[in-house]
Image 1: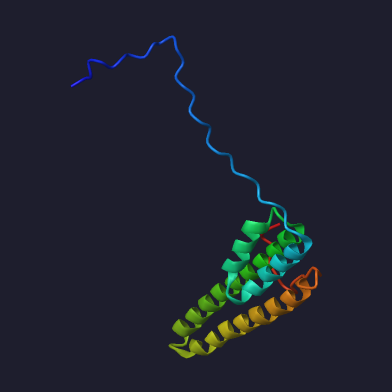
Image 2: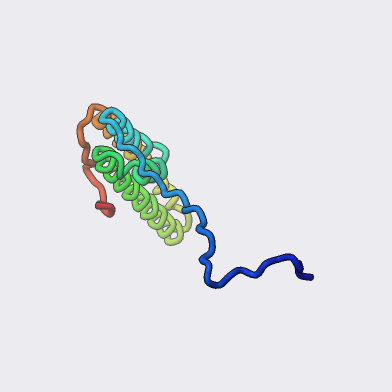
Amino acid sequence: MTDPNAQTPDPNVPPPQQPAAPQPVAAAPLSPEQDIQWGSFAHLGGVLGFLPSLIIWLVFKDRGTFTNTEGKEALNFQITLVFAYIAVWIVTALVTVVTFGLGSVLSLLAWVVWILGVVFSIIAFLQAKDGKHYRYPFSVRLIK
């Protein structure tokens, strides 16, 4: 059923303008203290894995140069550790299959990788919290 009182729109009259969608507002730049703080937290987050470093870098990379640099450094190191875990897992699995179970001793290497990750993340945090840039002694630089 149609409404008999409804008017048909005039084809010569333009439709009313819809309100424009709100534009996203750029986040304010970090203060120097906040920049150093988030840059150092990117390193400290490495104790928990690569996600804290990734999140901090993605959120703050455009808001502070120190955080951008340190976040990339921390994330590259965490990605390197993930590669190390995968390599240890593959080697352990292969040795276990070939030696019929004696490869489980190699699983201790995963603990060594974890301890190195924690130690270097804390060292990097201590350097970054003082405003000094830190380069890990070994890291695959995938994010530039």
